[in-house]
Image (cartoon, rainbow over all chains, first blue to last red):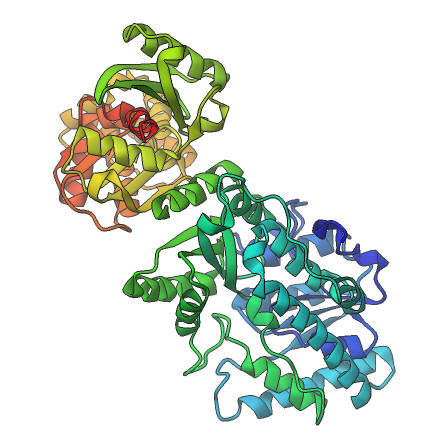
Length: 358
Length: 254
């Protein structure tokens, strides 16, 4: 198997690449229209172009996406999709349309209350509207059968990633998340072909000081797949990650869409069934309860919160989750990640947490 | 058995040597830019004090930001763990450690035997560190060693509200231009650093005995104002700056 870090293709090599941010974009719909959805991860490089347009307290996930676009790094994108999540992403919607007019933007509304009485109807209307806007751009209809085929393709990828997570403790965290990130940046056809039928091989970068039997087992919580530097630091500290509550992590791949029936209803039901991100609410399916159940189920020794600086939703969410963990006696560590993290200080925090638990 | 701990921090390198449970020697030097050389130098000094050669040191544990650069270390341990262990040795009743070093500050909740129960760190802002005092002492042409005494001599404290060291220095310049007496500005600077550290430490449970470690522990002004903010008496052990190295040497025995 190729080195996991090299699994993703450059955007310019993809067929009709469609960039997206946030964890609620219905990728299948764009795929059925002929696009190749690819998540726009942040880069540690900052060209400084976005700063003129953004307040100083903007999270660097959004800041980096706009910066990359203004620097011309995303010129090969055939489109960009944003789902309604936080205020910063909402702000990016306007900024994108004004400053990146050559890359068409699709904004997709997601209800705040996922269990509200009108949530499903609202979501179905939004999906239908999105379908029509995509069809208008391409000039081609998106037949139901094409949507079902895309749903089936994405379900296979989701199943593969779930299998990966089932063996998460066999991987160095850096290798585990290189594979998960690749699932967001590689065409699903390639992803399924490369990973399917092959046993996931564990990486070899785990510290020899801590064999699996005595390695600290952690869960990660936070927003996007954060800075790869964190995963390297976790690997160097000899830890294993046994699951996560990252917006773009395990929760994203946990639920399949139905492959029969109305495909828009299938997409809506999948999005509503996901564990909510901090910008959404579900009365019974709370993030704290889910995190605690993960801790018990995976026998995790602790939780590491990987919070991106200036991410307000996860900042408030942390307070609630940390309180729930405290009450349950589960140790946790908060690390705040910059656009270009300082490795030494990150190491000290993670290593001290490991020393505290061992 | 002889064991050694070397703590290479942002400004100074420290060493401690234990023999049969007894602290035999300690040493401190400026770390400079060559951390490995500073580590070797400080270990040599400590060994010389204890009349020991390197072969006699059974185990060496390195800590501090430069811990990975210490030649010949048997193990590296973070300064958080080492300061907790060292503070427990210096004050067995310790439950909270506040370590204010040159580059960062930390609050550590300590349990039985000096075990870390929880910790918080400020590593993104110089305003709660020894570097803040250095910059301000330089701006005010004051002797750093005398800075704390000058702060306590002031009848009032000037307000330094900026959370950024560079902008705080600008505030100092503004105060000087307005004719604010130098001791009041110095007192304000100490009040500001105490406020930053107290806010950070408030995120962990603070229980007596509270022990202050790190280089800034020798500054009586910061200690006094931190006591005011926290509402706890602070114990400053004789070897406060050496707590990390002492903890490392103790861990080396395990």
